[in-house]
Each structure stands twice: as C-alpha cells, then as structure tokens.
Image (cartoon, rainbow, N blue to C red; front, side, top):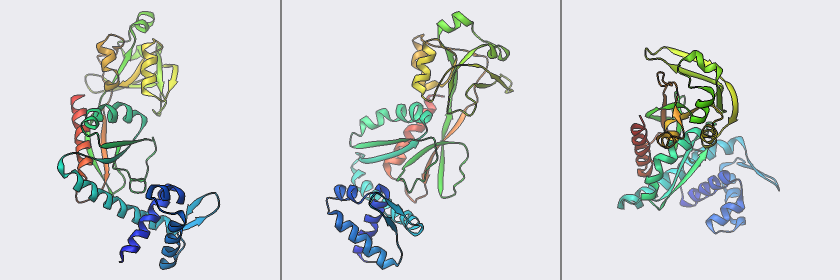
Length: 299
C-alpha cells in the first residue's frame, strides 16, 4: 500500500468522525477542496461510494460505515503509537477519552483522576457523560466505565472494584420525620428519587444475614444529578441513596447522617472496558490503575 492511500484513508476517517469537510480542513490546515478530492479519488480506487454528500450534511453509506471502522482503528493505533513514544520520558500527554454514566462520572471518574490530571498537565481529559453504550472504536474511546456483564467479545473488561452506596438524610429531616431503623419503617418516608435508577422510589437493602429486603418510598423530588440529589437531601427534603464518595464530606461535617445503618446496600461491580490490543497506552493503564486505587480506598 502506498503512503498516499494511507493519507486518504486517514482523511476519510476524520471526515466521517467530524461529519464535516470544513472542520477537518481547519484542523489539518489544508484546503477543503483537497480533502474532498482525496476522498473522491479513494472512492474511485475502491469502486464504491463511501459518503452521501448533500448541501447540508454528509452521511456514510453502508460500505462507508464498514470502511470507517477499519480506518478509525488504523488512525487510533497510529495516534497511540505516537503518544507512547512521546510519553517514554514519564510525562503523559495527548487526550484521554473516557465515557461514563452521569452517576459514574461524578462519583468515580472525577474524584479518582483529579490528582492524576494535575500531575500530568499535558494530558487533557475528554469525559463523555452518556448513559447509553457507544462504539468505543468509532468514537475514539480509551476507557468506558461500566457496570454489569460484558457482551462484546471484541472488548476487554477489567474489574475495578465494588461501588459502595449509603442511605443518608439531613438532621432536620430526621428531627421532623424520625430516623428509620427497620425496613418496614421506610415506606412512611420520603425519597430523593434518582432518575437513572430503573425504580427510583425503591430502596433494596441487605440485612446482616444477607437477606434482601425492599421498600417503596414517597417521592419528594426527582433528579438525574448526584450533586443536586445531595443538595436536596441536605435541605431536608428526604432520604437519598448516594455513592459514599459523594457524601463522605457532608457526613463528616454533620450536614447528613447515615440511616438504616443495620442494613447495607448491594454493592455494584464496576469495570473499565477497553478495546483489545497487545499493549495498552500508558495513559490508559495508569488511569485505570488510579481509578482502581480510588475505589479500593472507598471500600
């Protein structure tokens, strides 16, 4: 394969990812017409149309979508090779792209990597908060933080640790409604419903023998944001189910207190998902290790 063909494939992958000739032209400091001509020549060489072009948008054909996955993987590996060589001096650089749900981003990724990013100022975090599973290769994702079993055999899931959660309420709430101590008392109380949960008004706990119990609470407020849920709990609106990492400071300052201490919430296994490769980039392996260390501390 000639170098010019690799160049055309790289340009095609960039255009497919950005959805714009102009954006790629600005990034690479070359003429838009040159990029368009390169992809036209590539289509001619391959004998297939890769892009549907209109005045308003670009859309991949079925052949273009399949070819894009291959070209994107090629570009991803080339960028990784370049970054690995530049990082041999010990200073990480480039972009670290992580995808996580709102819950995982706020309670795991950000607190776990805060010091890590400060120690490597040339490394830029690109955090994509998304509750939907996305294509890691097509989106250029380095790490996906996920829960549950992995179904895609082309990916690798590394267990990071268990995700502890607690039930909390404000002293003012307990003074007004009393502190629940038994599972049958919970149904009389109010909850700050966290919308990403499938049943946000339900609380499931384990007793000391490991037996599961559930209760449905009255919804006092709804939110899909951990910080808002914590703030509403501090205001005394209801009981909140939150990651320990998100409330440990509020607990230590007395703004919140843990309730139902004789029970525990089922812990969730967290995974770092990456694409399969012979050698992970240093920035990826170090970030995964840092997240794992953080979760171990939070046990």
